[in-house]
Image 1 (cartoon, rainbow, N blue to C red):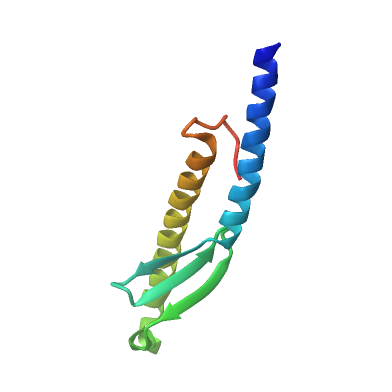
Image 2 (spheres, rainbow, N blue to C red):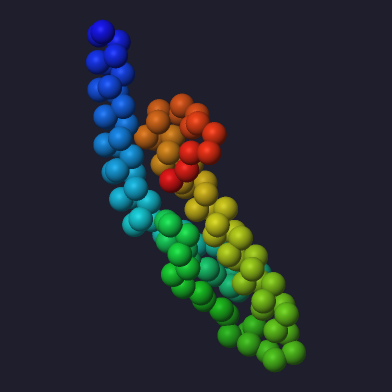
Length: 105
């Protein structure tokens, strides 16, 4: 019976840490860049797009496709950085234990 009580207590602690982590994730912001910093995209912790910065030198009508590609690349970079941060946060909550399949934030 002591083991069950210990497991319940541990589950409650993890649940409390998950709530704290979700608050930190909501406040998290990451930037992704492309084109050697010519395009910067900022994402919030839940994946929402917060901002886009474009170097004025890219504002050339004939090069719209390049700008579009750089925006996509900057977003992908920001998303990868966000995913890394989320994994770090999750490890801090679970103590490095792997999550069950299908579990997400």
